[in-house]
Amino acid sequence: MASDSTVTLDKASSTELQSILWFDPTRILIDGQWRAAASGQVLPVENPSTGGIMGQIARGGAADIDAAVAAARRAFEGPWGRTTATERGRILMKMSELVLQRAEALAMIEALDVGKPLHQSLNDAKALARYLEFYAGAADKLMGTTIPYQHGFTVYTLREPHGVAGIIIPWNYPMQIAGRGVAAALAAGNSCVVKPAEDASVSTLAFAAIAMEAGLPAGVLNVVTGLGTEAGAALSEHPGLNHLSFTGSVATGQRIQAAAGRNVIPVTLELGGKSPHIVFDDCDLDQAMPTLVGACMQNAGQTCSAATRVLVQRGLYDEVKRRMADMYRGLVAGPAADGCDLGPLISARQKNRVSHYIELGKAELSVAAEGSIRADASADGHFVRATLFSEVPPDHRLAQEEIFGPVQVLIPFEDEAEALRIANGTVYGLIAGVWTRDGGRQMRMARQLNVGQVYLNNYGAGGGVELPFGGVGHSGHGREKGFEALNGFTRIKTVTARHG
Image (cartoon, rainbow, N blue to C red; front, side, top):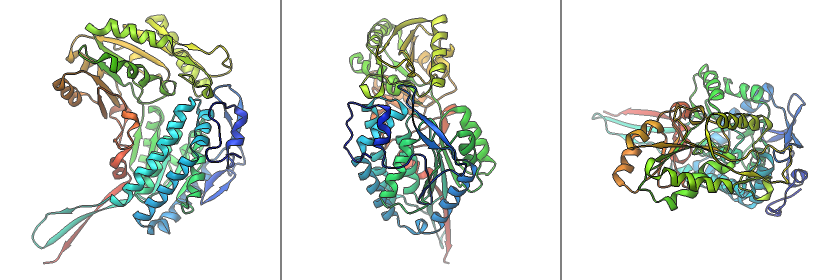
């Protein structure tokens, strides 16, 4: 049983998972108690770097979701509902401190479970702590307003929590996404039921264990692991929820929104993306180059906001293609613990999906460059080579569909108007990066890009816990992060007093 920062980050194997854990991952958390799933069944935990089984999680289902929602309701209507905003903030701050104390253990868990390189998973652990810290400080600053009205009336608004919030999180950034949802929901005064993805649940269970250590009251945070078709479906359609937040694929988001709609509750959806870099020929190319590639390769491209389309003005196209190709040839995929540029994909299913797109591209497009896979990487690991395609038509499948892997396409354009048409020419609208020194162009592009975030001469801004995040179109609706997430976890009540 490892604790705090005693884990070394330079060597990790699947056999180490059990030694890292200070909790039992075959248990779910309901009403402050760790218990087996009602089914008595478990699911395997796979190491994506080797394809081997390294543990088990509980296979929760509808009965467990019922119990978790009931526990969250009791907490919300009981002690948690009477907890002051200041005290909620103090508990979140304690959680943040404990996350930092266990950051290396959390990073090891995430690296083994998801397959991302250790330096990336360590950043995820620090981001989790930052979410908790940010919302700890924001908890007692969520205020209503007074409204000027007719003579003899005083009108004001109250921001109140929805009640019980369901949070369904994906497998690509489980620590970060659990943190940004749970921290905002708790800061606003809600209680939570969390359903992690069955492909990567262990770090979410670790987060829940830390919350209990920090003194979070029983029932405020409940975590039920299991299959999406069982536990996830039961949560999304549960009549005891007051709000639902989902991050994941478009198809699943559509089903979840339909299920929640039958109970007429608000839903926040953060879904897919096909985000562009737009590179004008007056940009600082030396500044742009590392980000043009890095914004796609993080987590082996398994990121909704990955910049998978690189739109380049004709005058700079050949130079960008040459430089990106050189960078791609140096990208190495390998085991998560070995410090490579890319780890494995999450599963054999995802590897097959991404490989299908790559083979399609090779049959129809020009390959500008490929990366490599370490020679000693396990043949059973879910590795693919980073692949760059060039001269890609804007309407090609690789330029339109979310691949969720280390694949980028280069698309030339002539002028600003064409760049906008191409950038806005998908069903998605999550993020865009614009690279130009022209201040007027920066403002025009920022206004006209149909996305939720625009980055001018940068991309991602280091994660940006404070920055509202979300999309339009098939990228979803509602906002995560920043104060906007707090607003989303509350409802407005208007109070009108007549005093003559």
